[in-house]
Length: 500
Image (cartoon, rainbow, N blue to C red; front, side, top):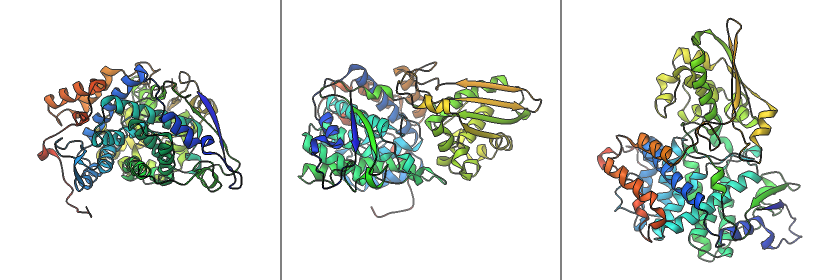
C-alpha cells in the first residue's frame, strides 16, 4: 500500500493530474492486478447478503416507490429489477436506483467504519446493473466490485466527512465510478474524469441521518450509484469533470471539508497489487446500525443475568465517540427517545435498540420495530433509563488501524434498585470477522433463507444460491441469473402516482 498525502493547492500553483487523488484512484482501478481468491469469495458472500435484505424489503413503501419509478424506464437490453420477471429489463441507472434502495432499506447489509462511515455493499447494485446492460461476465463483475470496495474503504480510512456533516455517500459516488471503470476496462483518463464527476454530484448533508430520519436514508446510496453511472456515461462520451475535485482551490476539501490547510492521508494499493480491502469489511447479524451490533449481543447476554428487569434503576453505556454522538444520547436528538419515531430513526437509537434487545433477549428485523413494540410501557421505562458516554479508550480502539484490534463495542453497567451493579463488556459483535462466531458462507446462506422465507419459492432460492456461487464461471450476458423473481401478484403497489 502507498499512503498518499492530499492537500489543497491554489489555482496559480498547477497540480499535475497524475499527482491528484482522483488520478491515483483511477490508476488503481485501471490496473490489471490479479484478483485475490479470498476477495472473490467475499464478493459472493456480499451479493448473497444484499439479495437477502433486498428481497425482505420488496414490499416496504420506499422500495415499492423506487421500483415503480424504475418500471417507467424499460430497456429491452437493460438490467433486471429485484422481484420482477427477469425477462423484463430496464435502464441500468434506474435498476441501480430501485435495487440499491431495496438493499439499503432495512439497514441490514455490510459496513466499514474508520475515519468515516460506509456501507460498501451499496456499490453492488449499481455495478451489477451496468454489468447486465453491458453484457459483462462474472469475472468482470468481480473485478469491478473488488475495485469499488478498495476505493470506498480507503477513502473512509483517510477522509472524514461526518465531522463536517457531509453524508457518507460522498465516498460512494467515486467508488462506484472506479468500480464501473474497472469492470468495463476503461482507461485511466476516463475513470479519472468519472471519479471526479461522481464526487462532484454526490455531496449532500448528514441531515438525511439526523433528527427525524426519513426514507431518504434508503434512497441516498441508490442515488449516488445512479449519479455515478451517469457520470461514467458522460465521460465515456468524451466529456470532462471539475478538476482537481479533491485538491482544487474551490474543491470539496477546500470549501466543504477541512479547508485550505487540510492534510489527508489516503492509502491505496500499488499498481498491480492485489486488492483486499473487502476483507476488512463486516456484515450485520441484526437489522440495525452497525455500532449497535455488539450492544445487541451485550443486551442478550444481560437478559440471562438480570432476573427481574423491573429492578433496573439506570443503564450506562461507555463507548466510542462515534457511537455516543451518532446513535447515543450524545446526538441530542429527542426523536431517538420517541416511541412514535420512524423506523429509520429507531434503528439509529442505541437506547431504543438496547432496551428492546434486553427485554426480548433477541432481535428481529420487523417485529423489533413495530409501533406496538416501541410503545410498550416496560420498554419505554428501560429506554429512558439509558445514557451513553464517550470513553476515550473505546474511541482509540474504534480507530485502531489494525483490523484485528479495531473495536466497535462498549462497556455496559446496569445499576439495580438494590444497589447492585451488573457489568458486561464486548469489544466487537459476535458475528464480526474477529468476533466470537464470525460469519462464513453458511451464515450468509442461512441469513438469505431466513429473510426470503415465504417470499420466494425453494426453486428460486436454490437457483439463485447455485448461480451466485458459480459467479466466476458466468459468461458474458449471463448475469441476469443473479436476479430473484417473486410472483407478480405478491408485489405490492403504491396507489399514489408520480411523473414516470
